[in-house]
Structure formats: structure tokens, C-alpha cells
Image (cartoon, rainbow, N blue to C red; front, side, top):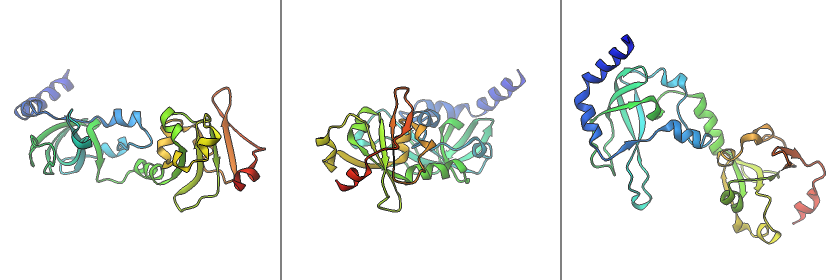
Length: 232
């Protein structure tokens, strides 16, 4: 009861600002939900980092509205923390909005830990995300359309960030795979969002190949015909 009383008093202290915020045609994106949907391509600060946050620190939030003008999805903007109560924050906008004209530089905002998409602190989780972004794989367009893959092989990398992995849905016909336009290069994290079980062997040396078995797990193909593959 004492904790609830303190929190109610804290919000009451800033109630005028809260009313202004509730009447604006924008929302704050929930980074917890976004990260849950795409854990390997959408970074959220670790708890170790958010626990450090205090008045005076600068954080980034994602502001958006329901309109989608010319592909616009939202704005990431800096907010300076002015007060904190557990996982609830008060801050002032540190950027001049480009799209969301109802927001003003210096505007007082209320937000929670779940809205913070970046901080100025070093974060081990961010380093992991860099690896998932910077490591590249080749995927067939069918993988992206089906959101599924069942066969992958690792060739020798062509470039520094190229992992060498080529990933297939397993449903492609020969005519499809013979056309390079049916493939594209994406971040490893895009594939891991579909199935991260491949992390168990992602760093294996080339040449190697894996296919999904009847139980949904990947088995290494020990007799893969590399001679034919490399001659094509």
C-alpha cells in the first residue's frame, strides 16, 4: 500500500503534463513487444543498462501514429530523463520532430522502461545485435515468402561480412534456384528470427550442409555432393 501511495503521489505531481500527453495523436512504441517479435533484429537495452538510468541521462524513444505517409513508420528521438520512479520516467524531448508536428522540442513526456529503445551506456546485448546485423547470409526469396527454411549449406565466403551460408526453403525447383534474381542477401538476424536453432552450428567451417528432419531438427548431410554443387 505504501508503494502504491508513493507512486500515485509521483504521478499526481506531474498530472498536468500527463493530460497534455494523452490528448496528442501519437503513441510510444513498445520495444519489449517489438523485440519479442524480432529478437535478432530489434535491439532493446538490457535490464543491466536500464537499471543504471537516472535524471540527466539521454535515452531514445520511438514515436509513431497510425498514418503511414510515404512509408513513414515513426521517429526515434532523444529524451532527457528528468525524474524516475522505479520503471516509470519523466523526461523532456531533446529533438525537434520532423513528422510529428504535435510534439515540440522540450515537451514533457511520460514513459516506461518498455519504451526505451536505446541509451548512451555500453551494452553487451548491443554487441550481440551488431553480430546478427553485420553477418550476412544468402536466402532464396521463397524462404522470405514462406517464413520457413529446411535446407542450408555453407560455401566459402566471398566478402568479409559474408558468412558463406546459402539458405533454402526446400521447395524450390531447379529452374528457380538457377536464377540469381530469386536470391537476396540479408542479415543473419532475419533468418534467426525464423529459427534460431541453427546457432548450434552457424560457425562451422565450410563446406557443410544441413537439412531439417521429420522431427523439425537439423541434421548434417555427410555425403553432400559438393563436387556437383561447386561445378555449377
